[in-house]
Length: 624
Image 1 (cartoon, rainbow, N blue to C red):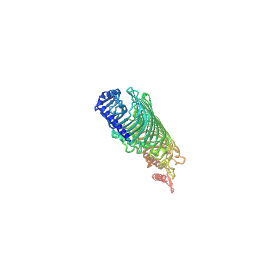
Image 2 (cartoon, rainbow, N blue to C red; image 1 turned 120 degrees about the vertical axis):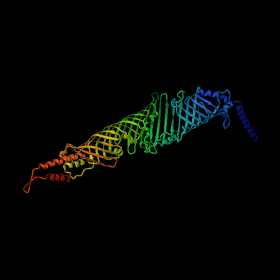
Image 3 (cartoon, rainbow, N blue to C red; image 1 turned 135 degrees about the horizontal axis):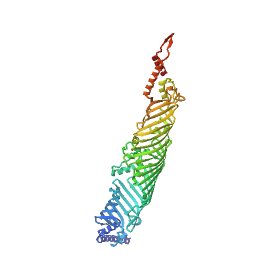
C-alpha cells in the first residue's frame, strides 16, 4: 500500500511540475501580442474589422486560455460593437502539440462579457437593433459543422432581456461562413419563452440570410406586458387600451417557416389569441415584392379588442390598426384573405365572413366583403387610408333582408320599428371610433323596408282625429296599437351625423303617405314632414269615414320623436293647414246659414240666427 501511495504522489508531482514548466514556457516563449496582425488579417478575410487596443494575455485559472480587453469590431457596415472582455480557453490536448508556426490557436471555449453589438440597416441612420450587456459562452467551438453549446444573455434596446441556450453548428469553407444550424433553441424575451430549431444558408456573402428554414413555438405570453417593456425604450409607443382587460394577455403560436429571399418564402402559423385559434398562411414572392396572407378561424370576440372609453381619441388601435398592421409593415404590394365563422360584438354576431383586402403600406382596398347578420346579408367594396391621424374610408355596400326587430334594439336602442330592411349605399367618412365615424359620414343611396310597422302610434287613428276637426263624427272607437304599413321606399343622404330622408313612400289602409325628414343619428332624434292622402271614403276597412273634402288631397303632418328608448313620439297635423281649413269651414257654414230659407215659428215667419246655428252645429259635431 505504501508503495502505491508513493507512486501516486510521485505521479501527481510530476504532472504538476510538467504543467508549471509548460506555463513558464508559454509565458516566457510565446508572446501573444505577436499574433495581433495575424488575428486582424484573418478577421479581415471574413469582412470583420478588429481593433485590439488591449494586450493579449495568458489566463491559467480556471482554464488555460487567452484574455483580451477593449475589442472593437465592425462587420461589412452591417454590425458593429465593443467587447469588454474576450476569453479564449485552449484545448489541453492540442496545446501539448502546439507549434509557434501553427495556423490557429487550439480553442476550446470562448467567453464574451460586458459587450455591445449594434446591427445597422443599409439606409436609415438609426440602428436596427442594439444589444447591450452581452455575455456569451461557447464551449468546444468548431467551424467544421460539429455542434457546440452556446449560452447567451443580453439586453435589447435597454428594455428586453434576452436569455438563450442552443446547440450550434457552423460550417466555414474558404474562410467564409456558409451555414448555421441551431438545434434545441431555448430563447426567453422577458416573459416570452420560445423553443425551436432553424438552419441559415449563407452561400452569398452579400445576402447572408438568403435562406432560413425551421420551426419556432412560443409559450403563453402577455403582449400588453411585452409592449410596456418596450415603452421604456420607446416612450412614444402607445399601449392599446381595449374594451377588455384580458385582451392580448394570453397568446401563443407555433410557426413553420421556409424563407428564401431570392425566390419564394412561406410561413405557416397556428396562432392562439386569448383561447381563439387561427391559422395564418403567409406567402412572399420577393421578386414581385408581393405578400399574400390567408387567415382562417372559427370565432373572434371583436368586442374585446375595440378601443375602450379611456383610449385617446387619436389612437388608431380602436378599430383599424389590427387590420392594417400586416400591410403597414410590408413595403410592397399585399393581399389578405380572411375567412371567419363568426365575429362577436357585445350584443350581436356577424357570421360567415369572407374578406379580400389589398394593400399598399397603409392604404387598403377592399375588393370583396360578405357576411351574414341580423338574419340578412351584407356585401361591399371600399378603400381605407390609414396614413392620416384619423383613418379615411369610402364604402360601396349592399344590405339585404336585415331583420329590424333584431338590429334596431342593438344599433339604436329602439324596438319601435320592425320590418325587413334592404339598402344600396355609397358612403365615406373618417375617424377612430364609432361616434367620430358617424359624425363624419357622407354619401347616400336608397332603402326599402318590407312589412314595416311602427309601434309608437297608429297612423290611421292620428288621421281620423285630425279629420274630425273638419267633419265631425269623432266616434268612440278602440284602435289597434301601432301602425302596420305597406312596403316603404326612400332615398337618403348622410351629412355630418344626420340621415336625410327624401321621397319616402308607404301606405296603410286607404292612406298613402309621402314624407321627408331628418334622423339625427347620435342624439337619436327624428323629425318628419308627412303628407297623408286618403284615397276613398274611409281610412280603411275598419277605419273612420272621411269628409269628402278631405278625400284625395294631401293632409300634412309634422312628426317628431326619439328612438333612445324613451319612446316619446308625436305626430300632429300642420297647424297652418288646420287654421286655414277651419277658417274655410266656418265661412262656408256661415254662408249657408245666411242664405238659408226663412222658417215659420208659431205661425210667424222669422229669419234664422246664422251665428247661433253655426256655433251650435260646430259644437255638436266636435263634442260627439
